[in-house]
Length: 474
Image 1 (cartoon, rainbow, N blue to C red):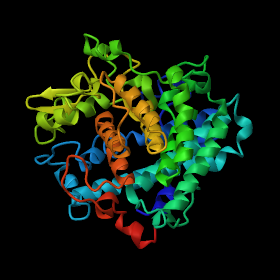
Image 2: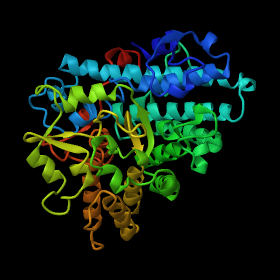
Image 3: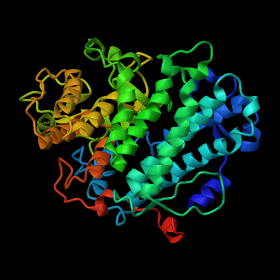
Image 4: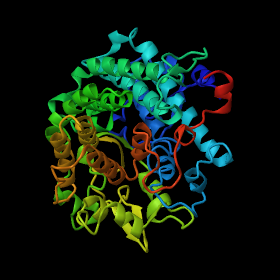
């Protein structure tokens, strides 16, 4: 379906009533209401914004495919030779396998559906500014702008070449039936950064800037800021976007703004919170480090279906030899938290265990799929310092490694190439189940995924747009 049709006929998803704000992260979608009814009150705008996050939790999007599903399968993070869902994905059968094509088309369509819902908010909010109390106008508009940038940036990373002079994707900025033609990659990145700059200005009022990410006064809408696109998530996304553009100075500047507050706002996982005796007390996703995460209410069911109790022809797994080699178990990685606690040996294979949801799981750890974490800011800062200040680059990597239980620091004599190789190793280990390895390899133009043999080109790195999108010039 053309994106013009999506934005022309959508209805805004509502996920809660005006009296259920406390539970907004956990409820399922219940109804759809036309925007002219919904966007009449501040509560209606709150509901519409939360509805956008809920759309992102679909298994076609960040609830599976864009995190631990399609994106990790295509990047060879699993051994999927016998997997009936992802074997064809791992072989890049983007257009020759109907199921793979459907998966990709659904990503495109659902991502633009999120954009349409976000634009519906942005198209109306300025004229309704008078209905808002406190800082809620700024918070809602800021998050909506950030969401639009976030989705478009991921569309760019998926469906466009890293040659930013080429036509990329449509950047849709209003709810309209008009066809939006593709912008070049350079133009898309510029529009992403424009939206992020505007979002950051609005989110100056974000309570997370004072270190308040869990509870803020009596207004439940302001709770759990690390599960929304908060001020620092905007800066983290800007760091990603600038690095994609090749502007390492700006990428480092934005990453450092997050790093400089991270000990207060996004503290490293405590050893006691990952090595606890009972699984219910283990923080499997390192949730204290999350800059932006989705609260996926049915993650237990999803994790069981694909990891914990999955059937053999579905289970996403990796052979123990390959997995332990990746973590350098016999040398420096024997005590790596990511091997010991967020992975699990099942028979002769490992599965990602970070989404395991035990009975009576600690509430503050539960139901989260991370989309941005503080460790990534260290990796970005390290990359930006390679060849400029190698010791700083090594220090940024050693900080992450030390907070993952690795007691052997990287040597200060590492060359540029060796530091870059260590960054790639870290992306493989750190973002198991989060889909980020594909994007790193694409941006850095890796010839192969680390555990695969296929020589990669744009044919492999650029997902095909829906056929009718191409026909209409998108």
